[in-house]
Image: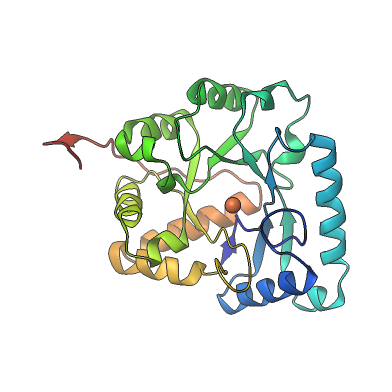
Length: 252
Ligand SMILES: [Fe+2]
């Protein structure tokens, strides 16, 4: 399996705090059956300059990849980032280094509190520039849950989306939202978004188990194939998306 979203690089964000935790997390990924991992540390343009982020990420990556224990794990490890949505991103000269390595896929997260101003226009701009935005943990945003046609429109425009494995494992309102997104084919893969070896740990296998029980093996296969293609920088085969409809105040 492949994990396209995790905070395993040491000492760069609120994820792994040191090399030891990073190694533990990679071992946990292996135990989950994951052998290809995309490192996606947070990048917030309001908190750190683009240049500073790229330097810090490179240093952290070298620290982990040059470690003998890490090399012995024999995993395929690549680097990307989790970009916090801001209209300022469009002012940067080159967004490619923020994308998943060897690709134009860009993982983007949004405010959970309020619908970001200009979200549709900015994502359309990124698409027209040749980037493919991947909307991180879409089940978290109340404004998508209140009106899932917003997510539907973004997916129809060419954006991809993922949900967190943790959401599927825990029983909550958010899980019901995530299951609906899966039902409508608005989600293209599942990621761990793991942050440490103690809590928010690598858990992708359990997440896929929930999907397997609810939607069957073919669905799991489609999601894991998508992850592999995105990891390799290839296009994915999109399924026919179902448009959410409102019936008696419920989205069905
Ligand atoms: Fe994340």
